[in-house]
Image (tube, rainbow, N blue to C red; front, side, top):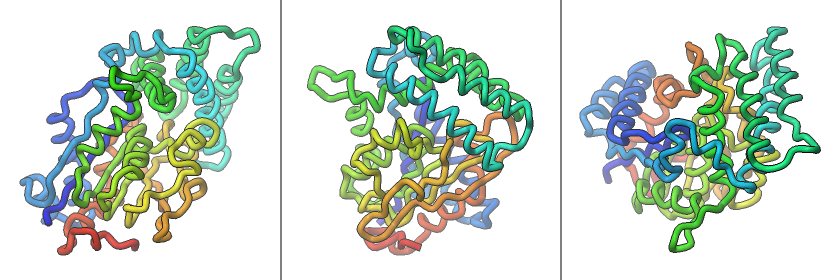
Length: 332
């Protein structure tokens, strides 16, 4: 059976699925070459190693998200409550990693995080979703000063940053039902389920996509020899973790191996060691977290993760196994 490789994107504006698929595949091929899998890299680029699918759902958030306009300002009360909790959990997670040595020991960063934490705390007199958005904008502005060279600078403006983070809140709110009664989160998972299909698939998910893919795999019967999560916010314990389905979070029963990768300069992947907060599936599979280090000011990029040999090597090995089927993948 021919292997299927499914990419699941994260936060961000609308995108061209074909262009994204080419970019993600190219980055993964670079990583495969670096891991010593040159033949697999050539076959991947030639379309022979696997059927590659890009699960695209950004358009479901609406056109306002693309420019960071309506997405932030039109936040509803339920989404605003989650966004408020997300701000506190996000800054606390960054501070925790900083204290553990994962974010450096620069005094400027410490003071910046302290200031952001004070800004993130809800105000007793705060009323309405617009007040939450304003608080989020203040926090985003502060965090853009974090090193290296402004770790959040990829978002260009605080408004765009908050707009994209609001996507996480909107997904977790389980609201925005369509005419058939399907909420936004359900419609997003339907896109991912369609991409995975009925056969075995290696699933590589990034950022918000790790939440979507995790919940989708729990709803599917298709085996996943390998599940890879990149820059995941799954273990944000006070806001994401308790809202995941099923509860408490566990590895999907169809997953034979789960590898989770995080970069110490990734300001989205706070509390990155998922095995601390995710239960094993019946086969004993739990996420195994591994740190990678990328260059540049914006390491949350999916392509940067995919180009890492530590990430791409296991994907090449999983896709190259002769018996790619329900028994393939292994738990090793």
